[in-house]
Length: 274
Image 1 (cartoon, helix red, strand yellow):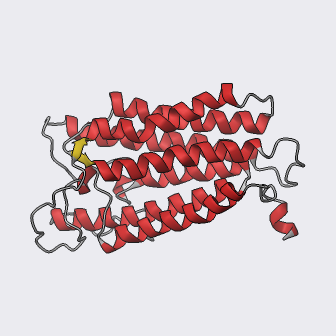
Image 2 (cartoon, rainbow, N blue to C red; image 1 turned 45 degrees about the horizontal axis):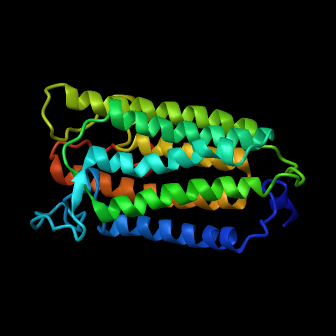
């Protein structure tokens, strides 16, 4: 236990935070497993897919219970509330604590980048189920708010003896640049002939894994933990990683089912391994 205290602040005196740490991790892990088993959140290439990741012929797309919206509007719905929450924290939770300032800045910059990409970089060819948009948007917004609240509760406490802020900053920069770079590559793929259809991505780490943008996004969420060093940020990073592992696995199966010439050596998330 003493070793753990060297890396993270003690559990906060908050039933809400402690409960959401457990519930959030369990929920994201379950959603990640659902991706593996074929029950996908309905956005991007899975917006109208069936519930199977099998390469066999698929039945007709299912009608969404709450309907669907355009991908662009859906993506804005996902990221804007979290961006506003992070931005508002500079005024709602003013503090000259360096760690808290870094957490606020990293969260605000990350979600600003996501909104910027939606408006100016991404290319769209489909819709997003409203129920999936609600789940994802709620997760991003609540996790951002709870991460900030958790950090606020650490003010005045003794810092963990092993300071990981610098490592977190480096990981954040690598993650956000890598994620942006591979999103640009995906957008350029759509610009080549102007057709709104999927192709096998190439360039960057796409030559060895099909979801490098997920890999770098995982780095971003782990950087939040390294900067904040709270239990809640750890559990959310772990949960996000579980979800994106499942989503990347499903994405690779999707490409294998759609493209006969998909390179078998291209893995899902970790080069040469998975």
